[in-house]
Amino acid sequence: MTSLTEFFNNHEDDALKGISHKNNIIKRSIIAYMAVNGECTLSELTKELHISVPTMTKLVQELVDEDIVTNLGKEETPGGRRPNVFGLACSAIYFAGVSVGRDNMIFLITDLQNNIIKEEVLNTFELLDRPQCMEHICSHIENFISNCGIDRGKILGLGVCMTGRVNPDTGRSYKYFTTSEQSLRDILEERVGIRVLLENDTRARCYAEYTCGKSKNESDVLYLHMGRGVAIGIVVDGHLYYGKSGFAGEFGHIPFFDNEIICSCGKKGCLETEVSGIAIEEKMCQLIRSGVNTILKEQYDQQKTIHIDDIITAAKNDDNLSIELIEEAGEKVGKAVAFLINTFNPETVIVGGNMAAAGDYIMLPLKSATNKYSLNLVYKDTKFRLSKMSENASAWGVAMLIRNKVIGI
Image 1 (tube, rainbow, N blue to C red):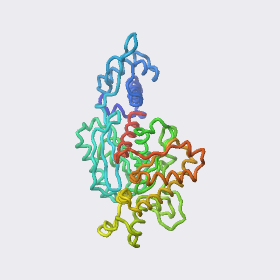
Image 2 (image 1 turned 90 degrees about the vertical axis):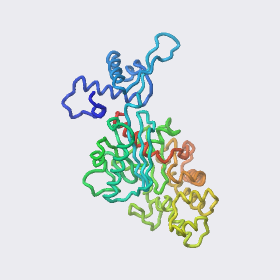
Image 3 (image 1 turned 45 degrees about the vertical axis):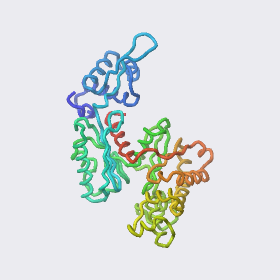
Image 4 (image 1 turned 120 degrees about the horizontal axis):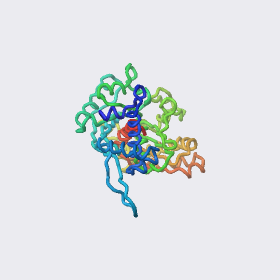
């Protein structure tokens, strides 16, 4: 094997289709099986992958010699001959995940077992639809990869997620940097020299929730992201649902209200216009200007702006106006969630994003409205929970997704 990168590249276009190529395919299947199922014996591998014992023994030993698989020694058994157990050597292969947020960037490195090895946060960043911003994204990622302390040759994939409409197949964002002839994915691949996956941030976080959260034993999950915008991630039968063009999950842009508020998408009456973090911020500022009392008035007078995180903190400090605005948003989005669970009949609805920090102030009215407007047979079989994952979940999720793509899961 000349290099890890060459080993994991697909060779559909190569003329060479001999024994070496076939063995590489089997090796990738071995790695994928161990990544999903963990430690295993040669007997388990031969049974699951339908490969002869001599061939499996030879190929697993080659992976051990290449430091991709580790021989963990004998398995404890009640009696008889004890088989050797094999597992992935986590230090052999790494993946990078980057979340490009509205006001920060999060970078991390994961190993083959999805463990986070290194993490950094850049808070001096603002996402703008300008060529200079795209250059900043590329240079920050390039700098992180170069200085993360991991041999670049061992980083086999880079996952990048960002807000807005993103199609992983085309590698393009259809909200930001739309005028460039090259896709953002292709630009990053040229700059960094690593295979890149571009993904939507909510979908990436949904995958992290599904893989690492309490929902990992469930197969049908809806992740509701309530941040400064509103979106959903959908897991159907254990797989992320993308839709025809990769844009499934634009929940915040359903025409839910009969109002004249223009949404960021250019249309009127979208769900986001009244329940997103940005909408709540604007309502708070309007009410302060109209003379309504709140503990946030002094901050507004000084800064002329209020962030949704400030409103949640104020609610936890018994600020009545903040509590009312959050509960109002919870009730409205709960009515919309009733439509979702009637349609998808999920096992679990996970609520994440900035608004999840509001706890019962958001969850109680949300669940109450969902119960009121959904079918009882559907509602009683759906569990609701707040996300317990940290801010790095999107970067972590997209690192997992590029890992899956590279090793063929």
